[in-house]
Length: 253
Image 1 (spheres, rainbow, N blue to C red):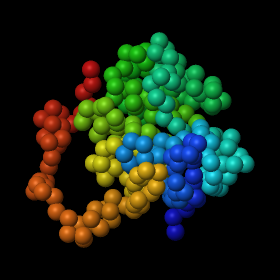
Image 2: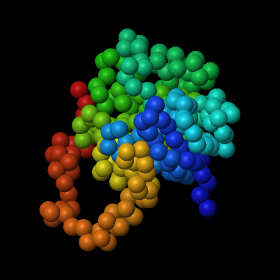
Image 3: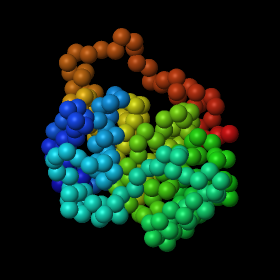
Image 4: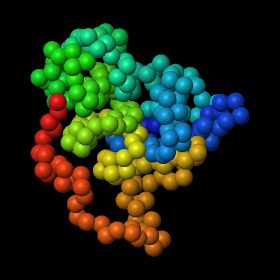
């Protein structure tokens, strides 16, 4: 039986009379990649920020690795890693300097080169953050989520704006993080990304969970209704063509 590492029960978040999150419940299992999907304004980011202790809930219960959010939020902070946006980094510092800075804030002893190797940025150790490409910045951002050796890693749209090569490189990094024992919670607007990465997904719309299952199960259920795509599905897509023609290894400016 799979162990539940995050339990959300009857979560509600109101802003005045507006209900951003409407009484949702779900569980995340230890060691899985769990996707939280939905259109803009569906309540994804609000839900994640509440679990991350960054936003207060209106009502409901959240348990993270046996820790109650209401009574011991600081303990939750110690076991999670949250991806920072680009504005969270000093652009003039090198990657090693930034890692050491965040390690000091976490009161952790780290080996910067080991972290940079994990995200394939060894050769950029002495580069300043502002000198990195978009894909490199995203990978470095993920590296900083691992400084405190978290049990749970939260990634909010980690591949937005990246080219196809950089996206697929980041997919492998996320799988690698999971293979080392972490649970990963991800939001994305790319359905192919969710299908490739996620063990299970919850789809939110207007503050409610409207579906929760594995990608295969959700697809099979749709096909069982008689749904057919208007265009014949081929064994490859245009992104595969692009990757094949330009090279499978990441090539960033």
